[in-house]
Image (cartoon, rainbow, N blue to C red; front, side, top):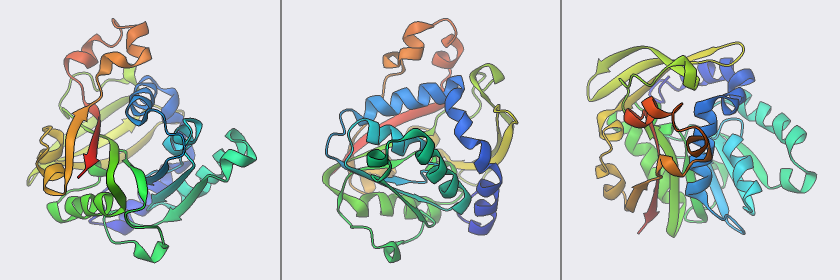
Length: 259
């Protein structure tokens, strides 16, 4: 799925929306959530924009960390609908009112939504770079991240690391059925072992999965750092289980600051 084919991406995400939140129950989902929590830190009173936030899994996490409000923007209307249902089940009325859902392609301008440019303390973008199969799409995503952050605001996001990692195994909750090279990057089919399993196609450019900070810096994001895996509770509790992943990690949670 790529934002370069928005209708195809929208349909693909709509098709997996009903099961997608179950990812958070899998080992990789738990690790990701804990790393994001470490990157976010104390969110008391902060306004947050969650780009590609889907069903609001990490938006709810931010509210529980004290955020005053989270605006979720996603291309999939079905993801957003299920997110609202999840909020009804999991959040108090007061907390539920702190999350708003908006449908839009986060690789293109979305000024029509009326969200405050330069108005957010934090912008999250989890896995959004894995829907960018060309530089035009990727730069569009970065442009939105920076446009909606306050000066001094923080970016937090999950990205691909080593797409050929031998740790992409069912024991952690996800496998890649195939990985193919495309100009400037890779395309892969990701299978997440929920019940039932879900599959979707992703694309990521080498400038992202290589760990380069070139684009971050070009768009004014500095002090780019990765959250150390060893700080996550699941790894502290069972380092042996995570040994292969730690040797060949295939996801990274990064945080950066807007100049």
